[in-house]
Image (cartoon, rainbow, N blue to C red):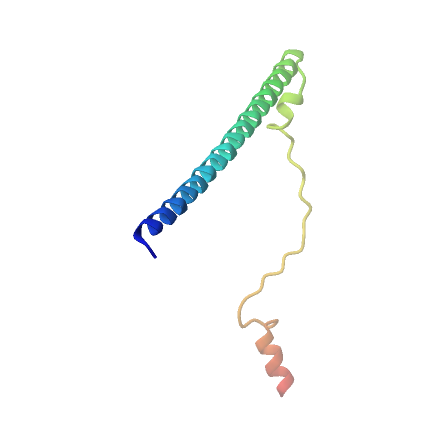
Amino acid sequence: MKPRAFLGSASVFLLLGGAGCAHGESAADKQIAELREEIHKVQADRDRYEQRVNQLELAAQARGDGAATAAGGAAPVATPNLKVVHLAPGGADSPDSTAAGAAD
């Protein structure tokens, strides 16, 4: 192969490879830009929801409604008395003692 032909084919490959890499960067940049736009939309939605919640809380406080304090000051619920079983290693109910008793 002639050196001149080799240099020509090598330069074609380099140009095509460089164009492919540049194209990949622009696709990545485009995707990053889309993600940034989506993040801005989510943040704007969150800000709007936060404003609505704040307005609702202020309105509830102005009315003297218990709705604003219900979340933080809920009355405790009575807990029923339940049977509690305590297990200890080597106790009468342990699997080792029942296996030893069955072997006898």
